[in-house]
Length: 267
Image 1 (cartoon, helix red, strand yellow):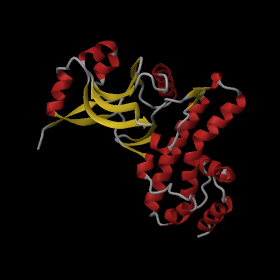
Image 2: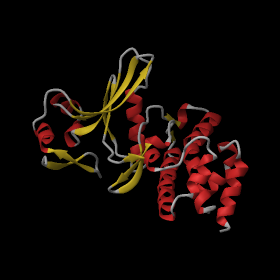
Image 3: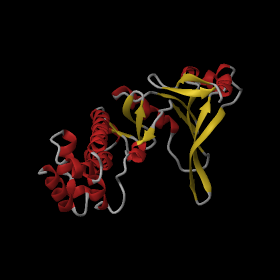
């Protein structure tokens, strides 16, 4: 078995890294070393974006002091000539999010590159067994969950709501708060938001647009909360009440969810 060593990837998170890769941490190459490609975005055969786990090269460490502290990090590259987000704006929005919540701060940006700390864990979308189509199918799926599973998911969802509301209270809408952009980190156990590519600050939009963006941020999480209450019954917490109030906006058949939740609460 290959030897492994521990390396910090954010102010609170560490991962194990194979010794042969750790040598690149101690003696960096000139350019970044790609450890793993995480995602690619394409359209009509044209590559738009590539997300990678990298070990920072010497040039990167000189340009971004945080890359010296966290040489193993996340790098997102936007390809020139393609319509994409602005790495500087993404950096600024991510930095604001880190000031408003426990999200680790970003590392840096270049004309077509954004860098941030790695968040070890899995997306909430992969952790939950719910979220299939049609939405009504999740009623029966939720009712099959064990109490420990449903309760655990509920606590993670409540923590995510607190994160989103902290951002909104500080004047930042995430813009793409789908559950795949919520990372469940096991150590320490917490949820964290990633990907602020399309985030918007309150000062940049009118009141109606801001309200719509905040509601859109919450919608995926509130749908999950509605599903979970089909097993747990109606919850009196803020998450439970918001999901209950917005059932008509979340689903085409809100009465089916109301009935399932109320029936479960009466058990």
